Length: 87
Image (cartoon, rainbow, N blue to C red):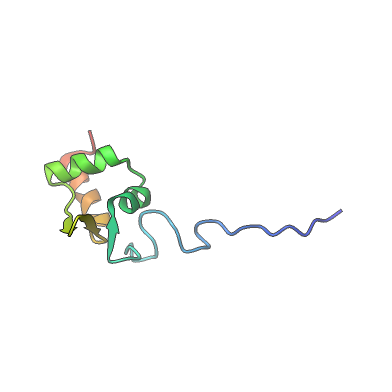
């Protein structure tokens, strides 16, 4: 008895891997909104805002929208590791 159900591809097959995608570890976009960055990195908004406040995470304001450069995906992890991790 076989069923002809379609199986949805996982996140990896859709090109939506974790925070770091691809063999080079580069992010897919040039900049992320705070919500997109948090989702991509697997962190909450509270931690993201704390990292913004203490300088661990860099961002730019474009009009009223806060954008986080894709390079911050790796840079924030390196800064947190140098500090001894998130609190």
